[in-house]
Amino acid sequence: MKLLTAFISGTLFGLGLILAGMTDPLKVLAFLDVTGRWDPSLALVMIGAIGCAAVGFAYAGKRRRTLPDDDLQLSTRREINAPLIVGSTLFGIGWGLAGYCPGPGVVGLWAGSLPAAVFVIALFFGLEAHAWYDQERRQDDADEAVADS
Image 1: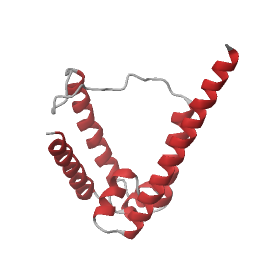
Image 2: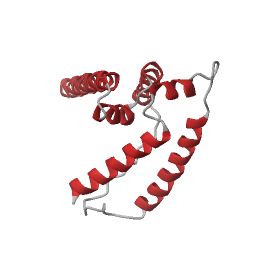
Image 3: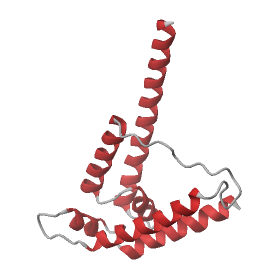
């Protein structure tokens, strides 16, 4: 059931990205080019996506289990901290340079797009670099805690 739910969700998400034009880097870059030939059509897509997500989160907040009957885990974190700001900034820079973000990048990879494949490979290395950095930081914090005690 989990794999079926993941497959259906991923397929619907990917089709939505394709229909909305989010998998076309030139359309995305035109949306981000507010001082040039700006294409505001993706703003409507984002507003629609926020509306759908709001309904989904409202529904999920009333449940204790997922559809495949796992524990429902929603984040309770609300603070804005340096890692969030740095990560958001890097995400925006990457999106602006490449015209891809993770979802459309994976859809493009499945469609056989070479630029999307390069993006997904770079994304993978970025994720691995962050995991390594985070592990090192946590180890340093643990070492300091032991030294202080």
